Image (cartoon, rainbow, N blue to C red; front, side, top):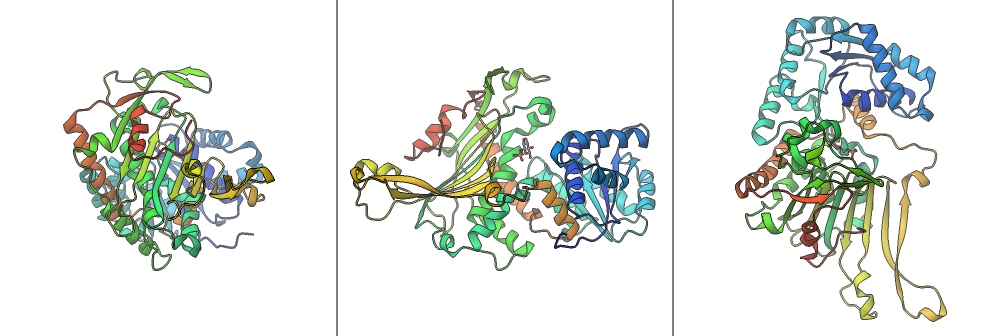
Amino acid sequence: MPSITVEPCTFALFGALGDLALRKLFPALYQLDGAGLLHEDTRIIALAREPGSEQQHLAFIAAELRRYVNDKELDEAVVERFLARLSYLHVDFLKADDYVALAEMAGSAQRVIAYFATPAAVYGAICENLSKVGLTENTRVVLEKPIGSDLESSRKVNDAVAQFFPENRTYRIDHYLGKETVQNLIALRFANSLFETQWNQNYISHVEITVAEKVGIEGRWGYFDKAGQLRDMIQNHLLQLLCLIAMDPPADLSADSIRDEKVKVLKALAPISPEGLTTQVVRGQYIAGHSEGKSVPGYLEEPNSNTQSDTETFVALRADIRNWRWAGVPFYLRTGKRMPQKLSQIVIHFKEPSHYIFAPEQRLQISNKLIIRLQPDEGISLRVMTKEQGLDKGMQLRSGPLQLNFSDTYRSARIPDAYERLLLEVMRGNQNLFVRKDEIEAAWNWCDQLIAGWKKSGDAPKPYAAGSWGPMSSIALITRDGRSWYGDI
Ligand code: BG6
C-alpha cells in the first residue's frame, strides 16, 4: 500500500483529445490508479472541442491508453477501474454556457483540478468561464508550457490566470522537474555534505548540460517553427536544470524556499553581449542526414514546412552566472533535434588537484567528473582517478566510475514517468516541482535579449547533418575555452 494519502478530486482535463493528453496524461493517471494513488472517489472529466458522442470519444481514449501504456504494465482490472472514473464533455472553451455541465458534474467536489492541455491563448478564457460557474474556490489550475513566447506574452497569460486564481493554486508544468533524476539532484546536493562543500568556483571548473533528441520535428512543424529550440527547450527545461545545479541551499524544502533560490540564479545570469552572440552562442538547423542507419530529411524538407524558415533546431551556448559561487565557471548548454542519440545529462567538471605530481602525459584526464544522467539509464556516476592494476603499470592512472544506476540499484521499482510525479504533486497540493511566475519571467527576460540579438544580427542558423552532434561551431564554442563536450563521438 502507498505510504502517502491523496485527497479525492474531480480532475477536469481540457484538451483531452490532444497529443499530450493521450500520450502522457491519461497513461500517467492510469499508473497512479494502478499504484493506489488515486482516491476511490476521484473522477476524471475529459473536455474537448471535438464533436461526436461521449461513447465514441471514451472508446478512443481507452484505445489510446492501451496503445501508450507499456504492455507489461497493462492490468485489465486497473484499466476497467480507471475507465469507470472517466466521462467526456464536449465544450467550446470560450463559451461560458458550456461550463454549466462541468459545474454540475463537479457537484460538491472538495477539490477540482483543472488541467489546461490547450494553447496558452485560451487559459485566461477558461479561467474566466470556470469562475462564472463558481469553480474557483476549491480549484487548482495546471498550466502546460509554452506559457507565451516572450516576457510580454507570458505576462499576459499569467496575469489573465491570476485574475481568477492565486499563485498558490497555480501549477506551471515543466515536465523535466518531474523526472526522477532531476528530483534526485536536490537529494544529491543537499543530503550529502561531500558535494556541497565542493560546489563552487574553488573546485568546479565548468558544467555541461546536454539535452539531445534523436527525433526530428515530425508532425509538430506548425508549433515548433514559431518557437525554435531556444524557446522550446532552453527557456524552460535547460534553465531549470541549470538552476537546480547552481542554486544556493534553500532554508527548507518548501516550494517557495526552493523557488526563491532558483529565481536568484536566473537573475544572476549574465546577459549575452553582441560580441558574445558570435563566440558564446551557436544556432543550428538540421539538414538531411542519417538516423538509425536510415536517410532522414532536413528540417526544411519535413512535411508542411516553410522552405525559407530560419528557425533553429539546435542551440549551444555558454552561460555565466554573476555571483560569488559561480564567478568564472561557465555553464555550457546544448540541445538539439536529430542528434545521434536521445541523451539528457549534466556533467560537473571538477578542477585539477592544485599541485600535480603524476606523469605530464596523463594530465589531460586528471579532473574528476560527476555525471548525472537523466535519460536514458538514469543514474549518477563519479569519475575518479585510480592506479592501473599490475606490477608493470607503475603509477599509471586510470579514470573509473563510482556508479549508481537507479534501475539496477532499485531493481524492484519502476522509474515513474515525469507526469506521474507531477500529477500526484498537484493532487497533494505540493508546488515545489512547479514553476513560479517570477521564475518564468526571469527566464524569458534572459532569453528575450538573446532572441533580440539574433534578430538584429540577422544571422542564419548553421546547418548540421541529421544524426550529428550539431554544427562544427558548437565544438569550437567549447574548445575555444580549452575544453570539449564530454563523451562525444
Ligand atoms: C517538450 C518539447 O517540452 O520536451 C519537445 O516541447 C521535446 O520539443 C520534449 O521533444 C522533450 O521531452 P523528453 O522528456 O522526451 O526529453
